[in-house]
Length: 357
Image 1 (tube, rainbow, N blue to C red):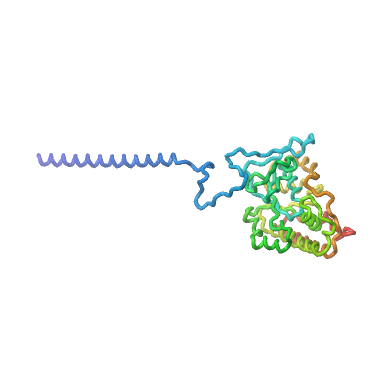
Image 2: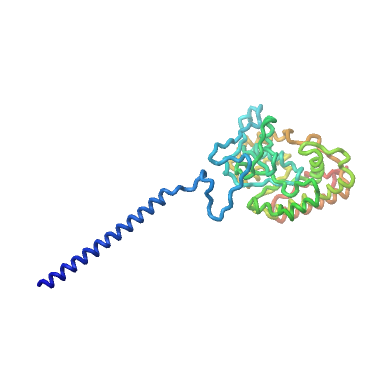
């Protein structure tokens, strides 16, 4: 009996020790799991204040002078462009909230009326436009500030409805510099590299643009060139450049844009302006359209603070006119292939004595 009782006691002791070991193991695992859970729970989440935090394989954010952090109070700089008009003076133009809007370019050849068009867009949307160029403020805002104040748009703020971008055409050195910017510095791919294939193309009759471009070369946005600037070898070179680059720029953007449209300066000047603006608003997904605001925008579209007064208008030599007509034909064919609205050539001034093409 004694040996059997001893065996039973040994077995009982063994089972007790095994149970205790299992309990201790389970308790240790529970403590370890709980401790790790506590560590995860109180790890600081990445926030705007953690400037050194970035996701793996992400480039650091670019820093622009004067750009404010999202956590800072953002001055939307409200302004009232139509003061003195009882029916329109309460309408405000201001920035949208930062990072709230996609980046849309408003691209054109210099002298196509882009600054004036920006005023229309700002009026109908109530949101400032911007520019990729330094010292090129909102036309509505800059007309109301004092000389001591200054504003330069940050094109990455996500707070402007569109941003002006002349791309490689913004040159005073003609064809050679155009090709340098286009092919060696990569401007030809800007539409898909920087704008995700979005774009709004502003087109104006190149037979007008060639004169405004020449004025711009000599006198800036609102100045004029002297009469002698419209004859001789330099004038011939200007016509050649405008005829080529105006069409080349337009066709490249028409072919590369996947989400966008074209606007015509002549239609914005005429009775079909509201239709042009509504097509723009539909493309950039801005709605609803305020009909009273639209009327106020069109009633005040003849502001002269950003327009060249007494525009240069001269007759074109037949060979100059022919070069510009060929440019028009090239762009018209591109628009036709794209299925976009066509150039309103019936509204074009052909700068001839009889007015006939």
